[in-house]
Length: 351
Image (spheres, rainbow, N blue to C red):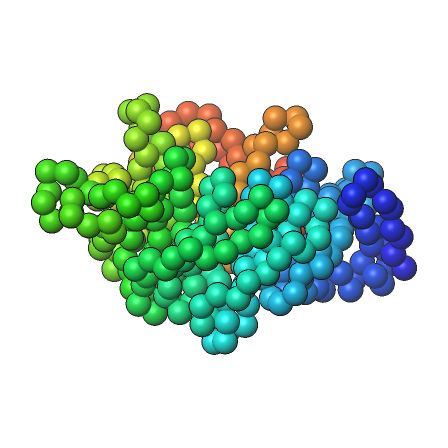
């Protein structure tokens, strides 16, 4: 059975007995997780769910609600008053769906010729990367309705990642062709002004990777300036950091393959990899720390801070949502590892 509780504009479903098993089955193969104040939103095989971990002990059932969204959604991002989700039908169409905070669909639009694989939002501007290699930039009106404004130079074979910088004026993408593309969506030039070749283009190509680029992210510069750096990860386990003008600053090679999650944490770089583990890269000393045990491939990463101040990496995987406690190393020589519940994943996230 399932019991419904009304909580303002939001309805939460408390899943019990066989109903819980059915929902758990639908919530496998999670491809994206978005953090909320008291839980998370997950894109899974059976739909999009709002989840609140149990508050009555480790064996309690999670509160969950299926959000009514048409089509298959694989990725999502927060917008001002809700969410944007991306997905579609492989080989047929891409789709973007706008949802309000209560889980109601505001609008949906069909885009491109293949599914949406990545989505990023900054204020009222959004960008999507599609499996056909196209990269699109759009806008969201005051009522939450999205529209596509233009298509940018994309990637050969598939576009896998997009990210905005803090100002929202620069967009970066990564794709199957191994390229990282940097766009100034305000129409200004990108690249080093002293380089006449790069200063004449609005799209700068970074070609230091030798395999498909799976994730991209902007990082604060180590020198404390407001200038941001661009991090990218590729299928072969390489992670590279470039300046916004295209200069290669540092590289890590031979890490776990298929890094699809990339985030900045306390100045370091946190990776979610295909071996099911978290890797923390010290950008200053280049020390590498690995957290957790091998498991299902991690497909996305977001860092959250709990009410008690604990910092966690929240990851999507084909086995469900996994959470890792992040902790600074006790010294420069002795890496410290910690997982939920003294080395185990939280019961409510285990499938």
